[in-house]
Image (cartoon, rainbow, N blue to C red; front, side):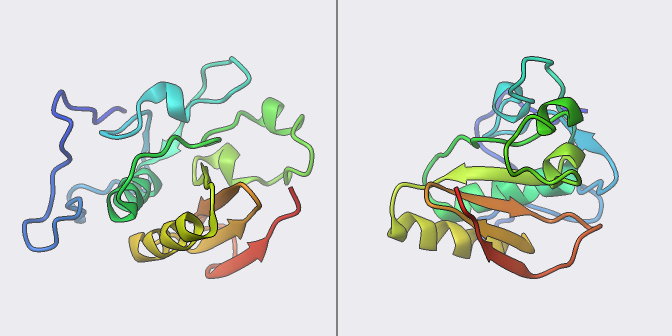
Length: 153
């Protein structure tokens, strides 16, 4: 399912200026392949298989994070097929990337890291991994909520 529109502006709540997210719009058990700020090629598996199944609610949280962060970013990683995940050093066998709930966002400095983490928490991400050059964000419902960890890469 794609909800991409020709407009580059997301539907926003006039009171908050943030993407409008309601029970009618968020289809938590459906998947998406792209959004206003994140085209399909930025979200699909990097092994070349072309697979992409991003949880709709997670993608809306990424959209909200992008707007609150205040500057564009391209995820280093979003969806991963299981075969590709198995080749990633240090990747969990139950990686949230394989279920469409996770995104790795590049950061260049501590100020950006701070702003991105705050934007992600405000957007509703509940699991955050802090690495030297990226931040892992996910909201996998099958894993413990409200967890922050320091990565080794």
